[in-house]
Length: 81
Image (cartoon, rainbow, N blue to C red; front, side):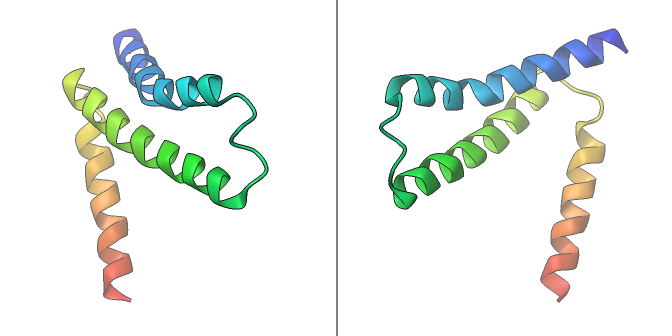
């Protein structure tokens, strides 16, 4: 269980690192424009999801198949509406 927790934390750090780097590099320049803020937030979300999923697969997280099934189920229900 500790190994799973450590792999989960590692995947989270890897997934969020690009967002942290972007905020450090941009400093306050991303504020003041709704478009810039929206681009940064949306980009951060997409990168975090993609990189987090890839990292969880690379670290062989045991819970990933259950998460993939859940996401597939939710997306399938949304398509049926």
